[in-house]
Length: 328
Image (tube, rainbow, N blue to C red; front, side, top):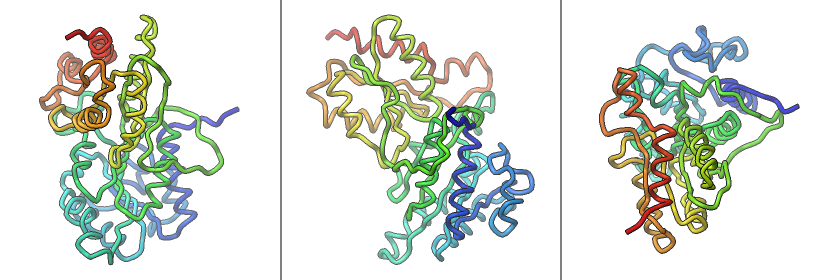
């Protein structure tokens, strides 16, 4: 029987395995120790590794992010957990102006092997300041790698690779996926950063997504199949570096693409993919690129407005039909 883990268990297992493998790895953040993490991702780790390697920090994102960057510069390999990436805005100076730039500004003398991780994006009725998706925001910055997994299997393999990476990696999770269950092998495995995964082969249209919207996209593909439309679904897994080659190969086969993206539409992940597809596969397109994003507004609180704000199966199906039946 395959082993089934929740997403939070897969992430915890990745951290434990890497901390056991390398004594330089440690975890720090708000409530990661005695409270076992806000979402119980680090449950049991304090008892296992002690307070010098599982460190409860003050409520000061800028402060403990800076400590993490300094520790990484001096030979350690920190995992810095943010209770939510919305709070990490307070640490943006350390992420963008320190972690991302120290290798460049030191002329290669200092590397910053650090992982910043925590939940990101929409998670229900949490209102405008607690519902933001930051993939595009941080992927804009040279020097940062941005990972956004959708399954327990991918989360474990990518996090282990992130912890071993010599550059700063931002690992964007989701509150709504922590309880998601999936197969995770007992034997060790790594997933390379920068490699997308074809989650569903198809021949009629390419659907590209990541994180929790991958599951919306897969559900849409099932609905489209009922109408005779065979959709190929690509899970980006990594936003920067972007695996444009996998996307281009798919578009050359299907001649149509719809990008499903939680970031806002203006200068979004979907915007960059649209540009690259038109640059490298323009002659293969039988219809304009379509994208399904959140609406270009702050996230509302009211559930009826949230339904309009967030991408849905219905919106994805509608976009696919637009490219399938496109006429000039």
